[in-house]
Image (cartoon, rainbow, N blue to C red; front, side, top):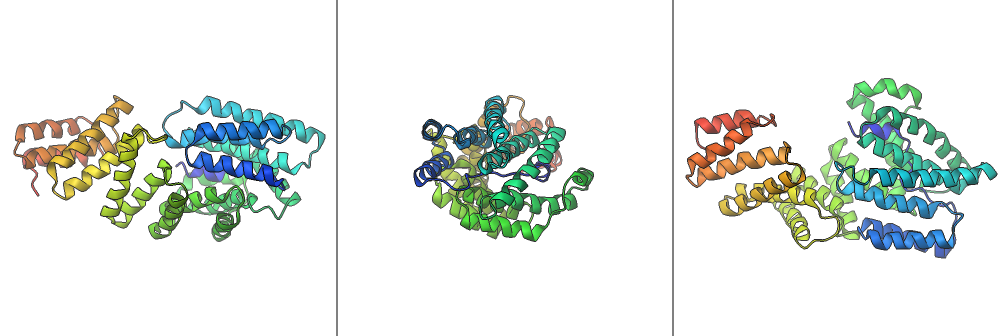
Length: 379
């Protein structure tokens, strides 16, 4: 359902100043790279310098908000950064409105106002605030369209149109319940959306990597083409090797392809960075990486190693949320029961199967637990 919101919000994900001085341009690109490298303190310093040097340009404040957006991206379930993000977005919109009062056709202010509203809508989608997200979409779309009319040669604006065209065409087919909401918006065009996104992915000034990110995710989720998704994941990781979001996607894509050893290596990389305390490699990354490493070890019949990592996954899950009943936790408990069976510790195995029965159903987890209670697991 999260993809529905990308239809409802006409996003300009990283709107750019239409034409900028080389010094300004370099500062913005440096700050964007720092964000993607999860160097948030450095990025904040860079964009505060932009604000100091170019106080009339809303770009500095916009990209300061993007730091908080990426903090949210690192753990989408956490709402700890929401209030700060919304406040910074409101600051961007306020500054843009002041500029537009004096000059309604200021392209720069239109770009950043449209981008700010679009990102606000994206977060509202994540928080399932659908009506507010729809309102943001209705407000952002004409702003972005006007900016594009005034500066048609700017490649970055095509990102918002590409996202809109693709999801407006695809999502109503997959989720018919969203179709009534689309009466407020123009029809989409899937191929045009793909073309626009691919154009920005190669030609974009500031939005290039955001376009690559969208192409990675939509090829995985909607196009059912993990090999195409892999191309974008590989490129993003080569450019930003210590971005946990990109690494986690790469692992998930490899799993979809059945490349279990490739996926295990990627998740091992993530886990080692968690252990070393690298920025952004948080409990969510630990839970995911230890789970997939543990499953790989279990399938390879490395019983003790598998138990080590699956227990780590259980611990991370409990630390994230004591009431957690995620698929990661449920499967880890089920597999730990399996491994105790392999070790001949039948009573201990039954304890884990019973824990699974006391939790919600997840992909026939209860049926499996009951079957293992009747008959021990063995390879």
